[in-house]
Amino acid sequence: TQLLEQSPQFLSIQEGENLTVYCNSSSVFSSLQWYRQEPGEGPVLLVTVVTGGEVKKLKRLTFQFGDARKDSSLHITAAQPGDTGLYLCAPNSGNTPLVFGKGTRLSVIA
Amino acid sequence: GAVVSQHPSRVICKSGTSVKIECRSLDFQATTMFWYRQFPKQSLMLMATSNEGSKATYEQGVEKDKFLINHASLTLSTLTVTSAHPEDSSFYICSARTGGGYGYTFGSGTRLTVV
Image (tube, rainbow over all chains, first blue to last red; front, side):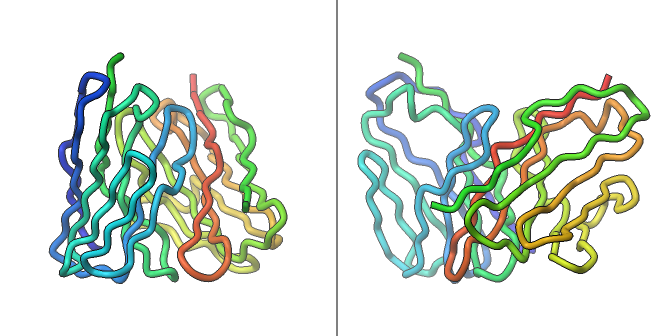
């Protein structure tokens, strides 16, 4: 099992602030996915990163895959209350079930 | 896009009874589905992998006789929590691979409360 460390575990910020959350491992991943889960719902895929050093943007969210493909970060600019949720990362080989990190629980206060 | 329909969304049952949760893949065939459990304020924990037409593969520590998984068709997998106890109260979520590449789609979850 590939051990994933997500940090911080909890984060509470004011609307308009920027934040970065991290997903780290000692293992090399062929690809990694980020999901957001809102209360009472299933996770929803945000992005898949595949290439070391890759940067992907989704509106105010910027995802980066580390050069060595062992870590990833998610940066949110000007956070909004709608960004509130549990952010999960998971390596994805395409043939095995997703095994998630513990997640970062983000709360954006208006 | 691919949709996984999960029912019921909420269920309350008495201790000792059994509860069945269904997950259906809409507009696509899911040869493999995954079942997760999520306790409050925690992440998703993989319980088992369900393969159409064969026995499910359970993760370490998950009782296969308590959590019965049936994947009898390419569009339906069910999880039955047998002889439920209050400690089984949790949020159960299914997921299916949606074809080649990296696609996984999740159901909307079932909140089980055992009283």
